[in-house]
Amino acid sequence: MATTDDLTRRKVAVIIGAGIGGLSLGIRLQSLGFDTTILERLDGPGGRGYQKRTPDGYVFDMGPTVITVPHFIEELFALQRDQPMLEGEDFPREVREATRVTAGESGGPHTRKYVQLVPILPFYRIVFSDGTHFDYDGDPESTRRQIKALAPGDLEGYERFHRDAQAIFERGFLELGYTHFGDVSSMLRAVPDLLRLDAVRTLFSFTSKYFQSDKMRQVFSFETLLVGGNPLSVPAIYAMIHFVEKTWGIHYAMGGTGALVRAMVRKFEELGGQVRYGAGVKDILVTDEWGQPVTRPLGRRVARGVRLENGETVPADLVVSNGDWANTYLKRVPARARLINGDLRVKAARQSMSLLVIYFGFRDDGQTLNLRHHNILLGPRYEALLREIFGTKVLGQDFSQYLHVPTLTDPSLAPAGHHAAYTLIPVPHNGSGLDWQVEGPKLVERVLDDLEQRGVIPDLRARLTHLDYVTPDYFETTLDSHLGNAFGPEPVLAQSAYFRPHNRSEDVSQLYLVGAGAQPGAGTPSVMMSAKMTARLIAEDWSAALRR
Image 1: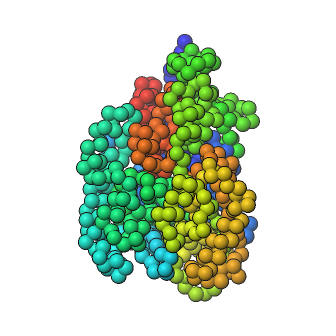
Image 2: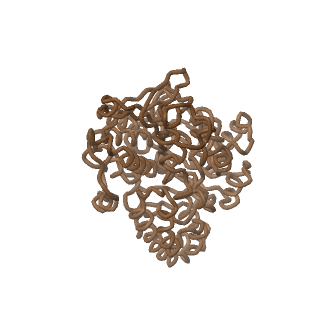
Image 3: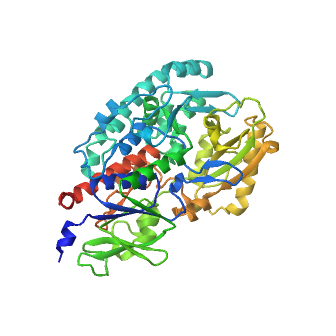
């Protein structure tokens, strides 16, 4: 029977993982009135967004580098302790009042107290295998000029694409952005509009309706790779990314994404939250509704806290996993407590691709680099390469890269006279059976050769002063990601909306999910949206307790 203390004390929440999703939710739970502890397995915050500092003076963001929709960040930094959550879907109001892309410093007044955001232009330099390039900056006139130079026959198609992508953005992002698809009916209500907008066919097929040039098809479909999606498989609703970026731009946190992560930790702790590092979670403690051990996957199961890898028990009123969705269930929730998310279902889910990421520093030779902050270096093949990565799961004879050179914006990340960079190569996840101890070093050498031979960074090997890399094994072991996936479940149609893992566990009461593996999906803005979705569900479930 509940005691008076049970009824009057503040409720305790435990979040597994101090990634951007876990920190965003922690800030929200503190503002709702919970006492929240975030348990992080690593020695610092960030998860996939961990930042590494090297003895030779380099700073590398190990994960996400593209920041969009800065008002999502502003909303987090504006929250106060014990602040009720707004009722209803306030997202459209927030969007329409948001500051659009401007020159100079960006971010709202609350954000600027914690971290400095600056806009990046162009958003991306897309370099084709023949040496030509396309600078995408969201400006329709600039886009038209470049299409006219590279593929003049696609100008009319761009006008139609622009119109139709905007319609998908307005319905899929502005109106459905914070919708949690917790039941079939919520999804069915959206289906007619998505069919009308042709948003359920694959993205590459959608772009191919408008563009005849292979280059333009690649320019307007590659972005889903940055959230783990195969353009040949993801639904065309992802065409809205074009308008998300066009509307709010691409931003960079001075000091790297790690500076944003540290700012979020600071805000969370100011609100009274606690982060514990080196605190890996072994099990989520689940009982029946009477507090007894679960013996069969029937009846009500309740999360009561977690057990750490060192054996310590951390009790809680609710538990949230910001960890990998598959491993949350496969490793941390007893099989006898899972009816919906059983082993067969979880293992059958399609996982996103993985990555080989090379972190390197090199001397500035005094010549202007013909690069931008964000660069997409496309290989000679596009569709065939994607089929190898996501389908047959083999390493092809060529590759594409995302090359990030933040020192073009922020020299503080490298010693004076040097650049810090990383290049990211999409590769199959560890379901491929590839031996990365063998294949990793070979692929690194091929990538360095490519950067030199294409003239992207002339004489790179002679100028190298730092070199390190991670493979899918890093994602599988250090980040505890099932099969070494880098972005959670692959965002195909059959794993989107209602069919994507739910933010409120269907198996265990008082257990929730947040982050890339939950709705709406991967990518920094989506993860922040996920945190607000999960916070709303928690506010609904705990409204009576929070009013006491």
